[in-house]
Length: 208
Image (cartoon, rainbow, N blue to C red; front, top):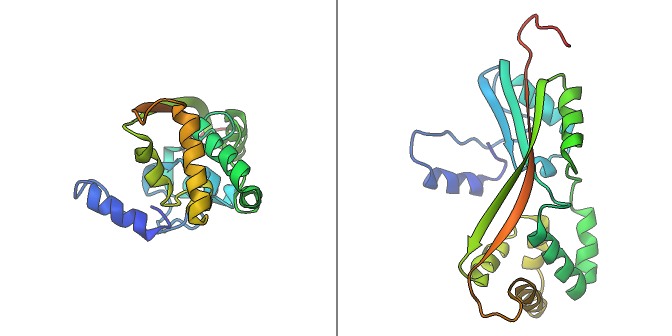
């Protein structure tokens, strides 16, 4: 489920037919009946949710007793060096655009401990957290740069809407930060996310 029809259209064209059903919707208003799923997962989107309590309540509502409610989110503060580099370059080249980002973004969870407090407050049992580390290879800088222009995040959207000459300056400064003096060779970027899961208590199960 996703609120963006274009993303779902891409998913339908990519995923093997019959393996999944794709639905337009908001996590604050999940269009399914109570308790119809064994598990419910929010994948790398917690930072986009305006009403966290309502969203988590809806995830619990559509999950059956004994089922799992889980989520993960990029560690924007310490685990996204690429995003930090884009922000730093944007601040150097266009400070006014960079400052405007503060009014466009919601506040992401900042730690596993903060996530745990929300899951505990929602009455979920056996709450566990984990840190997820991933690396991604890029064959060239353009292989990284071109997707940024799609504007899929607030920072990349800000870059994509810059005047051409300003965007070009961001491009070359970011390339220099990543590749240094080397040619446009392949490279690898690292990112970290934190994840959480909790279990809905079975009927009659007491809180410890």
